[in-house]
Amino acid sequence: MKNVMIIARWEYLTRLRSKWFIISTIIIPLIMVASMFIPSVVLNSDDQEMRLIAVVDETGQFAEKLEQKLADKYTLADQTPKYQVIVIKNGDPVRMKREAAELLNSSVISAYLVIPEVVLDSSRVFYYSLNVGNFKDQSELNLVINEIISEHRLVKAGLDPALIQDLMKNVEFQTIKVASSGQETLGDETLSFIIPLIYVLMLFFTIFMSSQVLMRSVLAERTNRLIEILLSSVSPTELMSGKILGLGLLGLTQLVLYLIVGIMISNFKSLELFSSINVILFLVYFVLGYLFYAALFAAIGSLFDNEQDAQQAVSIFSLISVVPIFFASYVIANPQSLTTTILSFIPFITPYFMILRMGVMMPPLWEILTSLGILVVSVWLAMLAAGKIFRVAILIYGKRPTFPEIWQWVRAK
Image (cartoon, rainbow, N blue to C red; front, top):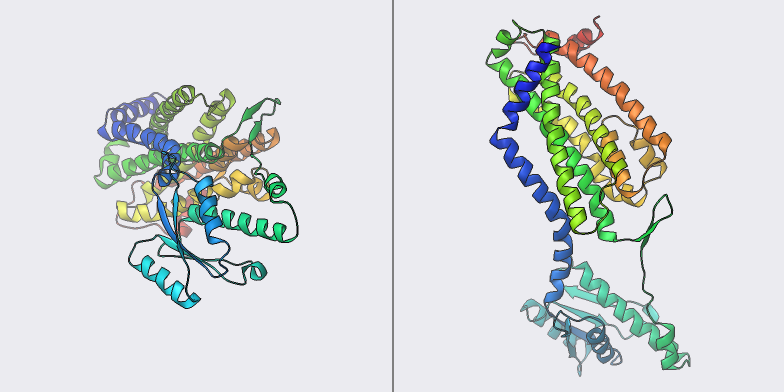
């Protein structure tokens, strides 16, 4: 045990003082902070620019109403209309469309709308733009056009315009988050999506950065034959255990710093980003997740002679680990679904899925205990297999072990 602690202390202090650790510890919190505020800034920044659009109204009834409603409904920070409308009229449809297309191609306008003569029957309006990726503009224009067409149909049916305005008044949609204790707080859709992602990214970075350092450390010592000198003083098990413990403490230090930054931000912004139970479970899932991946990475580092081959093997686990990020939108919207629950019990991604779910809605106690039990068993099996592989493979040079040989080492007593 003494040798394990000596190796762990050396690995921890050496990496702690390195420029890599200092830089990554500073940069990653900055990325997390930026990810909280940049999306809202970007979403609102578009509203600082006026949009010039053209309207080809084949009916001759809706263009002016559209212009007025857009001016009333959407304004910039200085209260000027967000949309300036050029109404193209007094011509046949083909000529009006050609004129609008020329304005678009010369970049005079950002888009143009075509309201066909049969719009009341077809319920279809056409939007033309060089960039059809601006979903916010399209959504706003679509909303206003639908209001105008609906009002026209109601008036045509004989209803009073004032009554129509009153009946079609928009309803404010207020989000309220209810805690398990019954406490109600105002919700924020943007934060509800971003915060769980921040949790997962924090866990992903700390686990994989620490595991990658472990693999490179084993690989470097194996390549330059330093491992032979080390093994003359300690056993392979002590060496692997010391490295895993030391770099695990390094990752834990980094994670604690991230949590401190997150708590400071949450206090400053009066947001409830972290609860005490979340922090505790966060650290538990980190420790188990790190030990699981550290065992795999240590085994991989002992199997290869160069980093290029080792990285190709590691890339498989890297792809598996980003699955929770791909599924983030689904999990945030459906934290208690059967699919989410099943994925939460797969050891390779259990820490990430459980942390992602905790950021949205605390899973049932039985799921937390089951996932922790699965992780504990998985860590024990991974450590056992990695120890056997590490002990044999660490001193093999010039020959890449085959899968049958590796399986034989794992099965050996």
